[in-house]
Length: 192
View 1: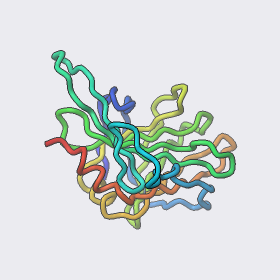
View 2: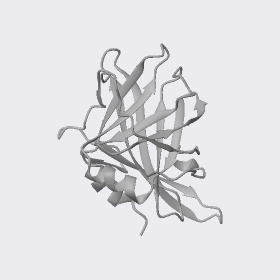
View 3: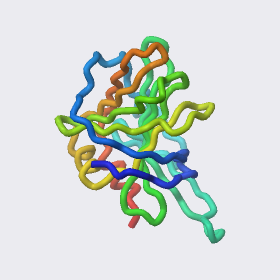
View 4: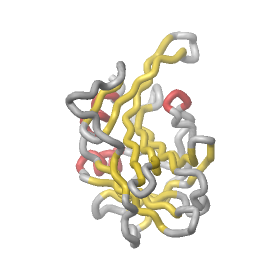
């Protein structure tokens, strides 16, 4: 399903590593009231270097590589907003580590989530994957995982991924992430 460890992906704020364990359990509680962050309308312009793929946004950054050579790193991301308080509650970012063929995914959760259970990812009827929360930074707590080909294929074929975690009050939160545009977005950043 998902590979066990990813090395850091610093430039994409994908600095994390972790193990993943498959589980059969699907999310049991209701989905929290949340929506993808506002889509860019025809009248609005995307910032330079940003491209939209339906519910996913592609962003790129130029950095100096290990040999001092400039490299461009890109990621696609989606931010889910809690409609009750109009605050971001989850950001999912996916990209490629230079020199690797398989993608990585980083989930940024709000501060205060219950850490030990980690995060559960469920796509369709397939087995759920458990991803540990590995670090908390001022912008939120992060869980990261390297995606293998089988799970990436499920993401590309699926309509929605449910991200399950425990909020500060210990209640289960099931956050729906739209997969509309995921395939086109990932294809646009795939290393050549």
